[in-house]
Image (cartoon, rainbow, N blue to C red; front, top):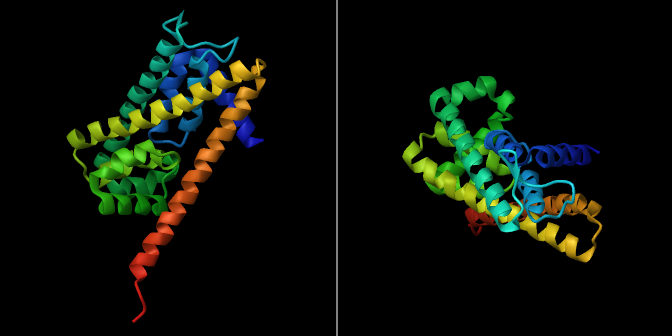
Length: 227
């Protein structure tokens, strides 16, 4: 029921307000876990022309060409997410760890999440920025720790831009493919929302499984043979 409610709220907001909704949701998603995956999936499906009653709009005008609509939603997502990422970096850089320890609950960042994020930065260095922003789930917990560990803004910005571009274009592309396929095969598009949610759930589960396997492999290598 929670997932259905979230899906309905996000898709209605994007369907009603087009690029403005994509911009607001992706701006916030750089710091808060606000279903950026679902936003870009649905926006991609919307751009494909899958919905008869909802379209991509900008400045009050409807974008009828699917290719331009796709570029519009993807670029909007990238720009908004990158701006939000810089805001998160500033929070971490100016406030530091003490600020997060006092106010982290408002940003959904607790001590355990912060420690995991800092560990990733120490292990991977600046590479953790584009990788983190390109991945589902963890991407909302990258910007603030990057500021805390003092990655310079001139390095953080292009890396964040790269990661968000990979994420937004890839996930919107999946949404485009799902929307186009359902329009061609079924004709009745009331199932597209369910398909988008299913794709989101499968992508999240795949990410969790891969992450656990990598962690198990790393621990096994670290343990080494018994002496």
